[in-house]
Amino acid sequence: MKVVLYSGGQEPSNRLIHQTLFQLVNAKRNASMTYIPFCHDGSDFFFKKAISRYQKVGFTRFHCLPVDVPFTQNDLKKALRSDVIYLAGGNTFYFLYHLRKSGLIPQLKQFVEQGGVLAGLSAGAIILTPTIGTAGPPLPHPDDNDVKLKNLRSLGLVRFEFYPHYTSSPKTNKAILQYSQITTYPIFACPDGCGITINEHRMTFIGNVVMFSGGKKVKIL
Image (cartoon, rainbow, N blue to C red; front, top):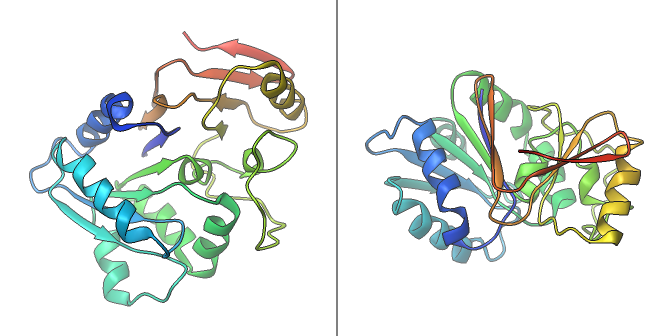
């Protein structure tokens, strides 16, 4: 299994994660990426930014697949033939709702099982975990759940939860500590510019990642 979880932030702070992502496809010539935005509206702008960002580290072919509008079987086949599928940031509830509705959840799992690299940014990273619980209350800055999603189970590719855009403050730490006492999994909190990569059984932390588990906070060295 090869997955990459980004918190967010500007391009310079994420460059090491971008390079690591490219290395996971063995620095392949003509490496391809399918970009899946959380919604179709405004996706062209962010897709163009993603192209510019990832061309700099070696990717050459790009495809965009919004999942909240109909797509063709050819679009799906092209996505599943990519070296990397990238789940973008946005509203986590809306994104997961439409990934399920489109039927893409089992396809993404199979993609990873067959050796594809799956990356996620912020909401997209949360969706790689067992549950999107960190996107909602009682944690700070929750996403709106306008789609009324009740089942928060997600891809479950990793056995931890992910909290992006982490800043250490008494309010944030208290909320995550409390949440860590009621969830099954440890929570890795990542400041922007930081992330986690998994290459088969090897997990690598990039930047100052913090773990919350069982009501305790532990800095990852």
